[in-house]
Image 1: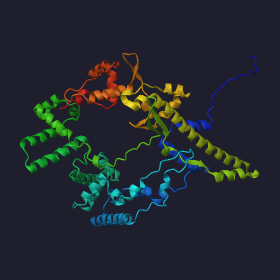
Image 2: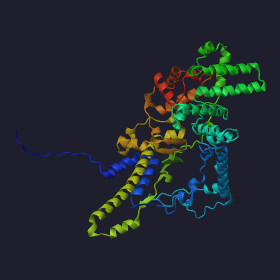
Image 3: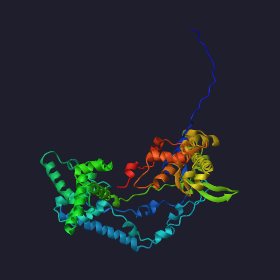
Image 4: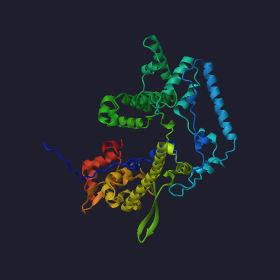
Length: 531
């Protein structure tokens, strides 16, 4: 075999660290980007916040409104009733001292640094709108903010304090209360709870399970009715049992009592019969009239499947939009919009001038390696700021192109949405489809019609009689409109919806209608039919 040398010219794409970081920042959400900035500020000494005011935590503002649940103050196991009462009295006294101290002091936001949280100037040169919520907070009593919400555990613990129980029973009841989930269910078995406390097999385990069984009976008699149930079926049974007892005490009519007992028999059967609204099967199993079974199902539907629902402090995931769209009115017959990056999401960071100047002025020949390492960190800081700038520039360009393509949506709503795919925006801006996909994921746009993810404005098209295309988003909106105006006694089937779309000139098969309906979380016609 003859050996030889040859030259070959080839090209390949090498992802530099700067490009890798740019791609990674582009696909991050607003929250993830904020976390990334915080991490970079901790790691790189050449980065600093472009805001000289102190953080909220330094003044305790972030934790001033925190609600301390009563269940957190109560010990899990009460060794004696005297000790338990002392704990409650001490916790209440501490709470009163805290609230009185807060309410007695005049709130003074002047000079505390919190007003500086609205950006002065940022690295991007964007003027942030000043927040004027401090004036409202001054008019609100801090004690009122703390007492706005009561947890399910706190509500149950307060009722448990009124019961005259032995220390052991009180401890068991308190423990079960803390084991409830947000819906008010006790999902773990009593044996598992006992083993979780370290009870060994034998008499110790049996005794603890017996103690928990008694405590669960007490728990299920507390308000709200149905709390402490292990399943939905048991929860409904508890509520019906309570209603029957109230009906007997109040001397209700025999017809109403018969209805409640029929509800009990229906709830004792498999719940999928009710879910399918299998009236004929329920009539056979309960040996009751069809009209009475329908009335019973209506009554069961009014029961609360999640007793702890009203106590859950739902922290709404407030979506912070990345882009703001504001109408400017019509210019030359065409609607014009202002598209801008939300100033609230712009990271306010900059290169630390003092450290950068010190590095430039200090060149120690004896420590060339250390100087090179610090120079590298300075370059990383500059890259980071540049990549963040590029991220928001790309988001703004893509958002502007989307608004330009979907002007009819911003003027007339969902029914006017046009078909749009990633390739169209990518070709217009000279970017790759993967870049558009990263930009439109977990990025939100605030519009006069609401806040939407950028991906919402993209959708495939369905053929029309005129030879054009209708956006799948517009078709979904049309299906929702048809169902909203249907008769409750005669709901529209998927075939009927498909025919109605054809009358509108949109070719949409029954299976496609079913897929869109399920995507809108609308049940089938048989489940939408009024009983």
